[in-house]
Length: 343
Image: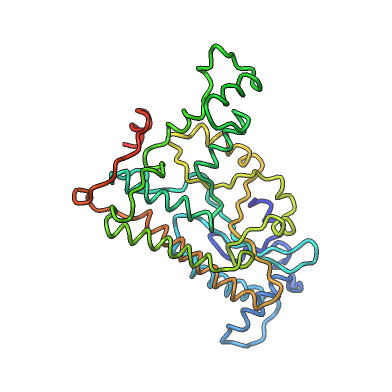
């Protein structure tokens, strides 16, 4: 999506900043719609009411907006986010989009590579699976499984039905299916910390980890108080299509995943190949700006989402205490291969 966005967007803030291509810096061209709307917001915050040329006004508008966004997003470093202000092709109002520039697996820190008990790691991973999709374009193991199921087993999810599908639809040899992967084999490759049944209840977690998980869920609940169609972190495909023609050609899966590349590198490569070739739908949220009053609301919701991401960042960066004084529940059995990976 990034290359699609560049045609219509003025990237006013984020990890990368550029002037809008439809407002030449060389000429004193009229202000574009997004500069006019955001300019009224910037003027309401200005201490200095001195007159400016249109060139100076564009620079000032971009600087004020950029500083306000960076103040909110700069503390977040587990993910690269960029703000793009888009102009409508149909003479509609401009819109602000949050673009996810990160691709591949989210760094899970101690959850994936630490030596804390599997039950603690599973509790943390489950919290991310249940909450992170509220603000980021991210897919989980279930999404990966569903994609693999459609591609290899015609949507079947159990081994016997998958075998029938391989024979009937893919010409597999009914006598020798050893070269074909089955659903149970995919599931068995999950390390123990990816399995929800392994998650320890809050009462069996150390207090510091309980607080981190409670912070994540509380911040997610605050985001839930926003109207579904309002705010910086809401994504509507039809709205996005009005500002980004060609988005329907992008891959259906988002660019970010909670599935670890070890041990799912081959499967992730399969399902993400179309995104690498055609572009990902990498928008975390898009919000039209019919009037200047919407901008303060947009910033308020941007801050709520950023606060949620900071709780996620704190959880991922957490250094769990030693487990000796915190007995853990029995772990659900996994295959020998999965057990080896989880260790």
